[in-house]
Structure formats: structure tokens, C-alpha cells
Amino acid sequence: MNLLQLKKVSKFFGATPVFTEADLRVNSNERVGIVGPNGAGKTTLLKVILGQLEADQGEITKAKQIRIGYLAQTSGLDSSRTIWDEMLSVFSHIREMETQLRHLENMMGDEKVLADDHKYQKVLDQYAHIQEAFEKEGGYQYETRIRGALHGLGLANLSWEEAIIHSLSGGQKTRVALAKMLLEEPDLLILDEPTNYLDMEALRWLEQTLAHYPGALLLVSHDRYFLDQLVEIIYEVDRHQVTRYTGNYTRYLQEKEERLLQWQQSYDKQQTEKNKLEEFVQRNIARASTTKRAQSRRKTLEKMEMITAPPKERKQAAIRFPTAQTSGQEVLTITDVSIGYGSNVLADNLHFHIKRGERIALLGPNGAGKTTLLKTIAGRLPILAGEIQFGAGVQMDVYDQEQTGLTPENTVLDELWNEHPNLDQTTVRSYLGQFLFHGDDVFKLISSLSGGEKARLSLLKRMINRANLLLMDEPTNHLDMPSKERLEDALQTYTGTLLFVSHDRYFINKLATHIIRLTPTGLLHFEGNYNQFLQFEAEQQAAQQAKKKESSPVRKSKEHEKKETVSVAQSLAALEDTIAQLEEEKEKIEEELCQPEIFQQPDKSQPLQEQLTHLTNQIEKQTQKWSELAEEI
Image (cartoon, rainbow, N blue to C red; front, side, top):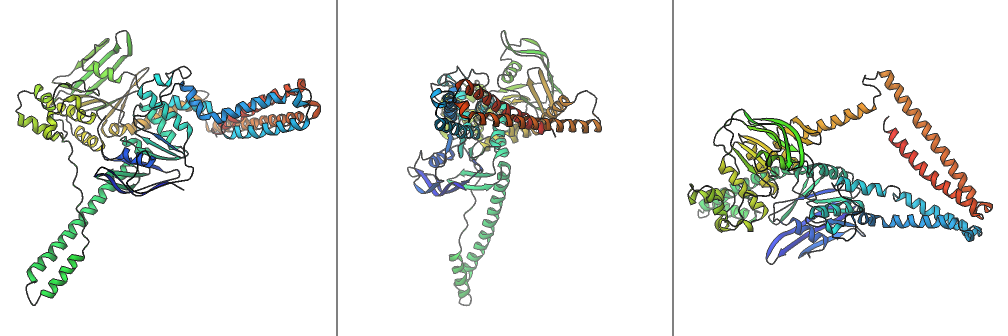
């Protein structure tokens, strides 16, 4: 089913086109990604789809009664409710049914109702009807779903019943808004940069949740790993065009390169043919013997549908990181180190060793101390205990995500020149030009720069410093996809040593030769990239689960395993018998409640009603046990 379709849609700001004649469609259950450089018009496209901006041309059609959920980049709930009450509002219809059920239960114990057979039967029928709908709508699971969403999105540290939403931080408000939207389950969920403000664990939870989302997804994201895991269609917004590609992000890159190559080949072939025809016409049009053939060639030229030249590659920052000298083989040793702020110890007893040329990703949940560890190694925070030793010839430089190394009052030119006064202006401006600071851009104040511009300037300073040990905290923040790719290429060819913190899993996977994970019990060391680390973690978890199932440390024999399978099957059969007995008891009580001599006497009907509620709950619990046990076979 087609949920959303754009046909030949154009949007202009004044005379400037944002995109022209854009076609886009989203079908039921499709996972669609939108990519493109910063400023290309991705968010504008979403606003046109949502009707927040009016299209100047074209047609937008949506399925009848479609429910659309939209989470903007910087949007968050601004409610006076508590987090818990806001989440409960999603299930107001279920809670209303719950209230109705309690009311009907009270009515069934009312003497006046009990005295009227017809009225009592009507109440029973109404109760059965509402209870069936209540179960179908997930009436017994909605609180569990709320807890799962809030915990999954990293809000477990808040008191949900007490925390007022408008008192939360911007990132927390955005996560609360996302949790509510996931619980609402609209037919089409539109998310603009949903991975902002999420740590690695929350990102993985969101990916798993969206992978099983019952509706369709339309995602704008710079998180390439996120797109790779989820989407099956990519729309690229670039140079006023919206282009459709089939596949995830990696496949999109491949297909785009193939299309551009084919386009260039077709263009070159036509240009060669055109030049030959023009040359023939010029040489032969004046000759009587060949003029007719020349005229024929000219007509061919006039009829030729010319192929436009492929777009030139956008100018990208010439990011690179040369080193002034080579360090010794041993670069950094951390022994029994504790980090934190004063008496607030975030992590202690830390040990690790870094050798020349290694690229190490430092992972861990928010608040684990990753940035604190980098700052401690850099000497920006005092070490609380232990020892940090640098090897021979190590020259360290730091890229921090807050860009504290930039002076807001400086111009771009002065920022670089003040630190390197030995460079002449021509050289400084040449460096700035390589990082896309052209013309009057060099006279901009640091305070007026965008996040991406500050990131590029900070990376340029790292390049000029020529260090052989780089500490980098979230270096891909604020960079668009092409800039991220340039940074990855530069760091892959970097001959020094790299220790970095990042939530960009694509970046980690492409760069890391080693993983160090900060855990509550210390550091976990792993040699390999991020995908290999995930596989290792999955194997570890599987091994732990298997160990729990084993009754002894000795591996069970095949005969023992067969016996265990038989035992599980016997337990399932026993549970089935129990559930059947409970259902029989429930049926008997329901029949009793329908008898006049029972429903006319509250002292008899009320206890039976309580038993009925208890049996219903028991059946639910036993069925859940049966489901969990069945998974073991």
C-alpha cells in the first residue's frame, strides 16, 4: 500500500530552488533513508511532506486516515506532566477500558443489578466484550512497554513518576518525545537525526526496535551505520535534485559511483561523436561533392539530444595529519589509574598499553568516564591515582568535542596565525583554503562559526601541529558525510597513534584496530574492528546464557541433553494441563455467575468475581511461562 507519494514537487525560497520536480514514495512497512550534504534541503523536504511548508509545484498524496509521527532534530516534549504520566497518555484508550472493567466489576456486585436478570446479563456481556478488546490492545503489557522504551533510550536514571518534563535537558526531552512516538506506533514514522543524544547502548536498542517497527520509516540521518542496519531505500537530496537508490547506505555509495561512471562514459562518448560530426561539417559543407553529406551530418547534430556533463565533485576539505617525527614503539602506558573529579571517582584501577600505529576506540555508556579519561591523559584534569607514562619521542595533540581550544573573540585567520606566528599570511590562507575557508570567511569571528566550521578549523590546527599521538573526542560531530569520509581517509593513512572516543559506529568500524571498553568492573580489551567486537560480545553473551543453563561445569553428554529436552517437553505438557485446568475453572465460575441464585446474592457473586479475576491473571502468567519454556526446545 502506498502511504506517501510526491510527484514532480518543487520548492523555492524566493528565486532560489531547494529542490525541483522531486519524486518520492513510501510504501507500507518500507524503511526509507534521506541523505545529502548539510544545507541541501533534507529538513525542508520533510517539512513540505508534513505540510509545514507549502510546495510551489507538484502533487503530494497520502493514504486516507494515515497517522504520521514526526520527530524534528531539536524537538522535544515541553510538558508539565511527569515522564510517566506523559507515557500513560498514549494508552488513554486502554486505561479507559481498564476503568470500565473495574466499574462493571463493581456493578456485578451491586444488589440492584443482581436482582435484575436481564440487567446482570447485559453487564456480563459488556464486561466480556471490553475484556476481549482490552487483551487484544495489550492491556496487560502497556506498562511493560513504557518501561522498556524509557530504559532503552537511556532514561533509566530519572525518576519517571516525579521528573517533570519541562525541567529536563534538551537531549532528555528529545528522548522522551522519541519514546512516546515509538509507543504510539504511527503508520509512518518520520525521524530527523534520531540518533542525536543517544549513547551506544541506546543506539543499538533503537535499531533493534525500529527493525521490528510495525509501520513504515522515513529517516534523515548522518549516522551511516544506523542507515546501513535499517534502510532499504535511499533518497539523496543534492544540487536541487532528489534521486532514488535501492539498498542501504553502503549500496547507495556503490550505486552512485556506478551511475556517475556510466554518466561520464555516455557523456564522453557523445562528445566524441559530436566533435567528429562538427569537424566533418566544417571540412565538407563548402565542397559541392560532399555538401549533401555535410548537411545530413548537420541535421543529425541538430536532432541529437545532448547529455549534460556530470556534476563536478564538490570541494572537500583536504584533511591530512602529517607527523613531525616518529615516536618510539611504546607510546602510552596507564597503570592502576583512577579518574574523576575530586572525590567523585568515575573509574579506577585502569590499565592499558598503546603501541605506535594503533588506532584505539574507547567505548562505554554515557557517564562511564571516556571523555574524562582523555582529558586526564591530556593533562587537562588531574590524575586521582596511578601513573601515566609516555614513550620516547611522543608528541601529543588533542581534539575535543567542545572546541575549547578555539578563542571566540579571534577571527579564523588570527586563530591560526597567533599559534603559528612564524608562518606568513600566504601560507596561513593557503592552509585555510584547503579546509574550505575562502575569501572573507577568514575574517569571521570564531563565535559566529557553525559547528561544522569550528570542527574543520580545529582539525586544521591538528594538521599543522603535526603530532604523532592524537587524542580525539567525538571528531565526527557536526561534520557532514563527505567531511566524515575525508577525515576517515586521513586517519587511515596517519602514521602516528590514535586514541579516540566516538558514537559514530561506521567511523569506529572503519578505523579501529583495537577496542577498549570502559565497564563498571574495569576495562575490556579487544583486538579488531567494531563489527568483530559486536560478534565477540554476542558470543560472550551466548556463552554466559549457555553456562547458566548447564546444571554443572562439566559438559553434558548427548544422552543428558536428550533427557533435558524430554524434561522441557514434559514441563510444557504439565503447563498445558495447568492452563487447561485453570480455563475449565474460569469457565465454571462464569457459568455460576450467570445463575440467578448467584448473581442475586452479592455475598456469593462477589467472591466468585474475585476468583475470576485471579484465574485470568494466573492463566496469563502460566501462558507466559509456557512461551518462555517453548523457546528452549
